[in-house]
Image 1 (cartoon, helix red, strand yellow):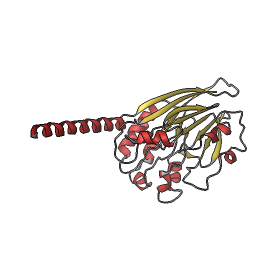
Image 2: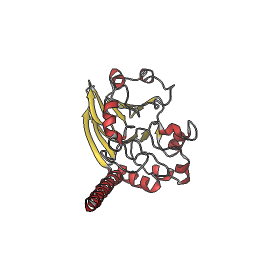
Image 3: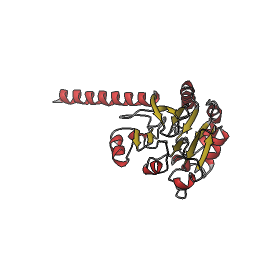
Image 4: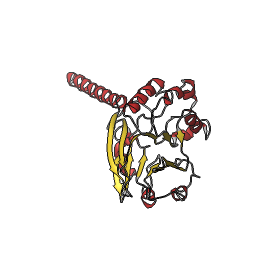
Amino acid sequence: MGAFRYWSMLASLLLIGSVMAVGHYKFNHPEIAKLDISTEKVKLNKEIKIVAVSDIHLGISIDKRQLKKYVKLINSQNPDIVLIAGDISDRGVKPLIDQNMKEELQMIVAPLGVFAIMGNHDFYAENLHASADFMNESGIHVLRDTALLVKNDFYLVGRDDRTNKHRKPLQEIMKDIDRSKPIILLDHQPYHLNEAQENDVDLQISGHTHNGQFFPGSWFVKRIHEVGYGYAKKGKTHYYVSSGLGLWGPQYRIGSQSEVVVIHLKY
């Protein structure tokens, strides 16, 4: 009986160790998720390459060394535009300032610019504007309940996170835009997906869920959200919910995968 307990305990430890090692690898080696989509609006025979990331959670745990790897990975995809779908910081911007992470963020290269929205963790910062101010100072254009026409070709709409109970309704943000043009929406938390469909959005990019981060979280995510992870289409609207590039808490991905999303959008 003693030998059985010994070998059972050893097997259990080896199994746990293997799972943790794989989980740490999945965090440290982000995959490239690729998506090719076309709008169903008037065709201009153009295409843009979007690199989208979310949930970087920069701070003490995910530090400047890790950020340098992320920036290199993003740039290696040769994006036309980079979109950050919320939670660039973890709990505040002081660690980002102390480590001079602005220096790395300014190294992201995209001809059409780098844009971001606020996620729920960005609201945990020192004050309501700290994360947005830091991102703007780092060359990242923060969209807060704002619609922006890019190159006179397509609209980029950025919603404040639903943590902000006073954020504007999507219909109000989009009231003055030309809906015959392609519309890309950034909304951190993937709730009420019908709103994008009802407002003629062509592509919504979200994050927040981390795809559960580690099992059984992924199981709960699928039951809480209409789309908890990955690609979906409702009517003429395409959706992508990213599992995130970084994560919150322990640096393990068990049943999920860190990722960068590359989207070829034809319009």
